[in-house]
Amino acid sequence: YPEFKDLRVSQRKITADEAKGAMEVLAVSSTNAGVPVLGWDRTVFNNGVPGEYSRYIRRMMIDDMKPDPPHELHTEVDYGLMTYMQ
Image (cartoon, rainbow, N blue to C red; front, top):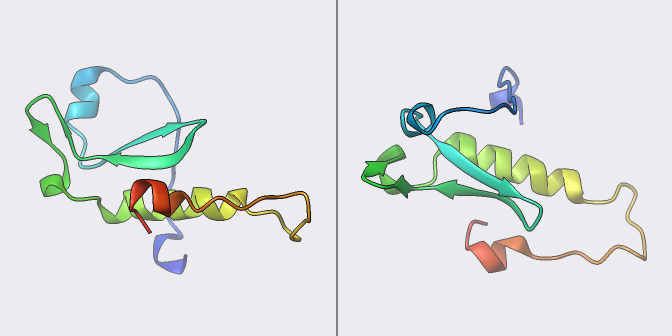
């Protein structure tokens, strides 16, 4: 992903007001690889569509879950099928 080579990602606690002031918000949990948050209360992020950073971070997380090298005990799950984000 050369177009994002200078992107820095951090994890920290933030306030709801700080999150609502963001350009893009991405929800991450143990059951998904990152789902863009399009709106929260009356706040709309990135005009209500997944932004380029959210899509990039999601792709990066999915790529990071792939075993390298592939292993016969690994079962790939098509997360895009569940979230329509591919």
